Each structure stands twice: as C-alpha cells, then as structure tokens.
Image (cartoon, rainbow, N blue to C red; front, top):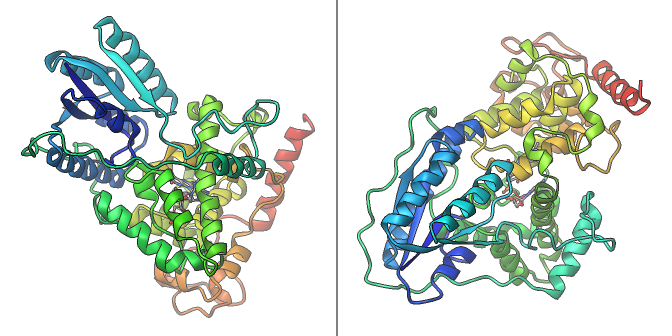
Length: 467
Ligand code: FAD
C-alpha cells in the first residue's frame, strides 16, 4: 500500500509537512501535481504565474526522483475533474493515504472536503496539514477567543505566540530508494498569453540562495529602503512564497538566525512583513466571504462604484497621465511584479480617485502578477479600498503626487518606466500638467486628483451616515 503526496501550493521538499508525514514510515511514496488550466483561468492566474508554477513543479519532479519518489502530472480542467483524476490515480496505485497541505480559498476548501468524502468511500484516508502560515491558522486569537481583524494587535500576539512556540523547520526527507529517471514533465497549458521573462531563478535551491543573499546584504537596510521603488530594497521572494517554493517558517527562522546588533532594525521590519502575510492568511481562513468577491466590511457592499470604460482601460495600460501610477502599471505589465508601495498607490488611485470597484483591480493584478496570492492580493486591495481590515479611516487617501515626490524623489523610477517624461526635471516629473507645456506623447491626467478625492470621501461619508 502506497502513500500519495498531492502537491499544490507547496512546491518544495524541505519544510513540507505533507511530504514529511508521507515519508515517515517504510511504505512506498508517490507524488502528484494536477494541472487545472480551466480553474487557473477562472481564478485569473497570470501567464507569469502559470509558467512559474509549471517550471517549479517540473523542478520538484526532478528533485523527488533523486529521492526515489515518482511524481505524476495529472491533467484536469477544473477542480471537479481533478478529483476524478486523483481518485483514479489512487486506485491504480493502491494508495492507502493521500497527504496534502491545506489551502484556504473557498473553492479549494470545497474541493478538499469533497475529496475526503469520495476517497473515504474508496477506503483511502485523507490527511491534511497546516502549512501555509508561520503560526498555524486558528491559533492567533484575542483574549475572547475571536480572530483579530486589525493588523497591529494581531502582530503583537503573533510575536508572543512564536516566542513561546518557535517554529520548527522540517528537513528534506532522506532518499527512499534508488534515484529514478523523472517521468515526462509538464508543459505550460494552452490558453495563456506568453509570460514576461522569468523574474527569479527556478528551484528551491535558488530560492534559498536569494533569501540568504538578501539577509546577508540587504535586510539591514530594509527599513529605510523598502519604500523606494527605484532601489532593489526588498527581498523579491514573493513568487517563491506565493507558490510555496519557500515557506514562511523558513523565512522567519533564517531571518531570526541572521539577526545581529548591526542589522536588527532592518530584519525586524522585514519579519513584520512575514506577519502581514500571516495576517491575511488568517483573515482568509476566518472570513471566507473575502474569497467570494465580498467585502470584509459588509456595509461597504452598498457603495455605488463608477462604471469602468476608458478610465479603467487607461489605468490598466499605464496611460492615466499620473506618472507614478503609469510607471507602476507598466512595471507590472512588463515584469509580472510591482513594488509594494506602488501596489498601494495604484490600488488607491483606482478605488478612490477613479472610484472603480476594487474587485476589478484585484482581478487585474491577479491576471498579471507572478506572485499572485489570494490572501495578500485580496487583503491589499480591500485595505486600499477601505472595504477591508485597514484601521485607518476611509478619508486617509494617498495623494499619488506627494507619494511620488516622497518615495521617488528624483523621478528615477518614473524615468525608467515612462520614458516620455525622462527629460522633465525632478519636480515636474511628478505632475507634468503643472507649470509647463504638455508633454508630447504623454496624456494629461484622466482625473482631477483633488476633486475625485473629495467625491470619494463624500461617498464613503454618505454610506456611514446611512444616506
Ligand atoms: P518583501 O518586502 O521582501 O517582503 C517579504 C515577504 O513578505 C513578501 O515576499 C510577501 O510574502 C510578504 N509581504 C510583504 N508585504 C506584504 C503585505 N503588505 N501583505 C502581505 N504579505 C506581504 N503579495 C503577494 O505575495 N501576492 C499578491 O498577490 C499581493 N498583492 C498585493 C496587492 C495589493 C493591492 C497590495 C497593496 C499588496 C499586495 N501584496 C501581495 C503584498 C506585497 O506588495 C508583496 O508581497 C511584496 O511587494 C512582494 O515583494 P517582496 O517579496 O520583495 O517583499
């Protein structure tokens, strides 16, 4: 009888609870990965992410083969068909137990529940493991036993909890048999546009090397450089974390080990971002409505968003006439990644200045990001749109021009992505419509920043007043 590991959002050998559990005994171990292109499309997966996942699943198959564990690629269009393939595979290979690490999107939860029922009818046990967050979901609760809905108290409790229960990182399982020849590897399914050039090197070893390099050379300056998009001031690890090539625990444990008197501030500030990731995973776990296109704050469902039309198209294309927004959107289109500060600026611009439904922005980001991760993308969008967990009031709206002047003071990032503006001086580049002739080839702003800000505030206020 065989143990089967179903890899999903955890494309790694080390620190993988499902793989470790399957390898605990002497029974033969097999692995599988199911390609579900129809479901990926329904979930707005970007071409960059699809290619990243396929490349990493192939790499994982090679690494597993070295351990003597065969990996099978199964094809199914949607999650429903995926279960048929999986059950069939389990029957063929006399599987006794299926092991997997939990995922928290609503469709994933429903799929896993259905699997349990179907597999158990066949006499196959299903074992699931908590893996995705550093502190297991359901553990970080208020004194009243309720989930936190605001980040700062959550993070305080998160740190205390981890001080008492320091996370353990599981080793890569030992080889179980002679190395195998990896079976035919998976190809990128049809139906996805060509992906932008790969942003990071493929593989678990490459992910760890990047983590080590970041902690060694850059983490000490993280606090001061993390908000400046022209600098390489953040780790760039998000694609690995989003697909589980690295775990949050591995990041936290490595960061704690690398912390010295000299880099403490920077490293602690980076650890805070790992806490943000955990926070949004916890929100997704406790408030499943956020993965059903619903607002975290139900009263904001009544907001009457503007239609889409040309403004939405201009935002997507990086042609809004607001340089920092356009530079960011062009970075996203060309690379599949966007700096965190810019994600906040562009999301607020769409949901507040253009007053376009945050759900459209969330889906657009997902359809472009290589690091698309439901919990963080939804959390970040709802935070920016004031429909989510943001503790700040709705009227605190970023002004993209002042954000630009503050975080890209010389306009270096704008010049890189909006070459039409390269010749402007460092003051005018943030708002080219001021003090000078129009810039050839670059649009004027599609919205009046001040008036649109006031209109957004009025619409939120009316909601609050029950108007
Ligand atoms: P670093 O600054 O080096 O941070 C390390 C890790 O911490 C990141 O890789 C990420 O896993 C986590 N992290 C950092 N900031 C946040 C945050 N604010 N929320 C949650 N986790 C965080 N992150 C995603 O991984 N996938 C998404 O789809 C995603 N969509 C976002 C959408 C919006 C509107 C906003 C405002 C933020 C979004 N983020 C998302 C969070 C953040 O922008 C990225 O994680 C970060 O830019 C990745 O770059 P990095 O790896 O260099 O981050």
